[in-house]
Amino acid sequence: MLQAYPTKNGTGVSIYGNYGELNSLYDTIHHVANSLDQHNGAQGAQFQLLMNFAYEVRKASSGQRLKETFTYDADNIQHVLYGFRLVWTDILIFISVLRHNAGYSQSDKLQQATLYLLEHIIEQALFEYDSEGANAIKDFIGQRINISNEYAFIIYQALHIKYVTARAGKARFRKIPILIAAHFSEWQQGYKELVTSFQQSAKEQGCAVADLEFADFPEIKW
Image 1: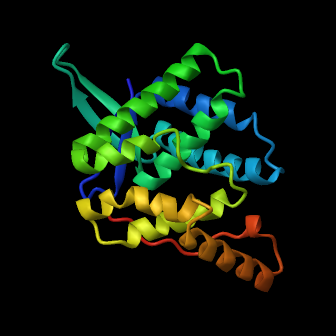
Image 2 (image 1 turned 180 degrees about the vertical axis):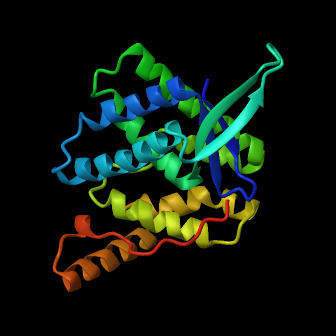
Image 3 (image 1 turned 90 degrees about the vertical axis):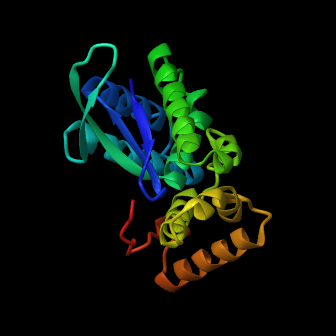
């Protein structure tokens, strides 16, 4: 089954599986994405988020990301698994989009099982890295993130940069709930200032906020 482990510096999670497991995850992501209208504001933002997730899964399944050999106690046989890494805030957002829309896409039992398994292994990886921080962060797995916001895709990028550039360690990890709230809670001042900056940038570039993207992303120290 899919497996997840926190990265060395606590920046994110490494997710592994064999080809079939990764392919099931990829199919589940696309199944949900295909239920969205990519030309419709908030749904378009969610579609873009899922495409970013699907891209990493596809790269992993083709052997272009991580590769590890695992030995299970039950069979004592070496198994080669392929994987990929995601920043904590990214995977939490991706799961929220999947869970929010899964009920509208007539998912079958395998797709539902894949989604539950993904949520399960991410929660396990959170606690493996830091149980204190995980107790608060686990409540954001599949919920409490306003991914139906029409600016969700550009907000996800801003949050990614904010988290990655902060000093690595458990103190950063434990601030994830605060960071998510500051970026996605519409009543918070941080959110209002962020949206105002997006609107100003869009005006200067003569485009819609939904068309904005950050040009440069910092190198990730996993």
